[in-house]
Image 1: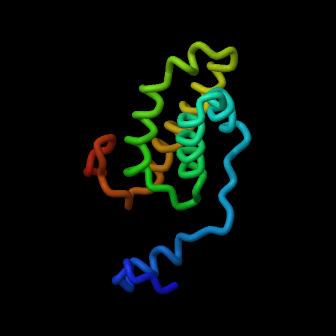
Image 2: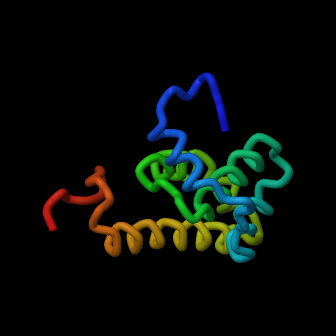
Length: 118
């Protein structure tokens, strides 16, 4: 894995350690993508977010602002859809997973949602 754009042995080691062959999105989260399937840009964006959420080495610090922005900007699509409640529920499960992960992993850096004190 020799990439001229990467000149850090530590970064190369980190990328190699966190690489996974396949990331599987939980079936109960796919409804969030199905609801916006007719909107190509939204569909691609939510699929990317679901991929990141499902990755075993997800980075909530980077992911949560993107997820928050997507939810707030596109909530109307979900509220108007017959299965909208399922989509909103999927987003809620993701957000609760972030809270759960932050509570279990005290080594995570403090972010806007967590105090740096134990």
